[in-house]
Image 1 (tube, rainbow, N blue to C red):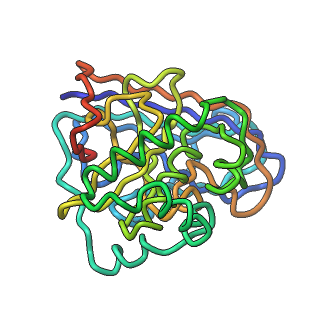
Image 2 (cartoon, one colour; image 1 turned 60 degrees about the vertical axis):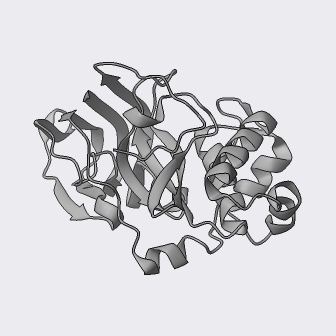
Length: 265
């Protein structure tokens, strides 16, 4: 499978800013083509790369005031190597985190899924349960919303679906984490967020939105929740988001059998 991915982020920098972007394909891929550029009012700005967890690649820019544009493009042929599951990571991804309050959701998880002992079946059940209880409504959630608020509000966007899946799985003793991805087939196109759970010695995708084939996804950033995987962090100064454009195209879109275990590759 060949996948072509692009993103363009436009900011108004009103005070010199220290910016960190997480939009590049993870280092587990070997792109045949990759372009990374940053400009302020049309003039090039230096970009430095910093290694993040699980092969993530952060790009840091110190931008002067002005109209700032960060662009990324890559062509990826074939699949990445399977993600590893170090013992320390599996422990971390069973703990509650800022947006995945698994401790508070433990009674709900036990009541709904406590009788399911097969972890593969559990992934399907949790994904289906979340998908049928939430309505996908753009702009319906706040950046500070976690899994509990999502469940109470019964609506959200992809990161909200993923946080609720992660929290429920952790509450049931399954290591789970959030992954930011490019998603060919997604509509409307944007950065996408999915859950990933450790089952049978591999990380498996859980996407309760069912908005894109899981086998086409391209990993960007991986972490406990959205706090670790945001596409932009403004560390200092001021930068206001003007526009985000994302494109992800595969040479074919396979059918997605939701009963099958799938890994990001």
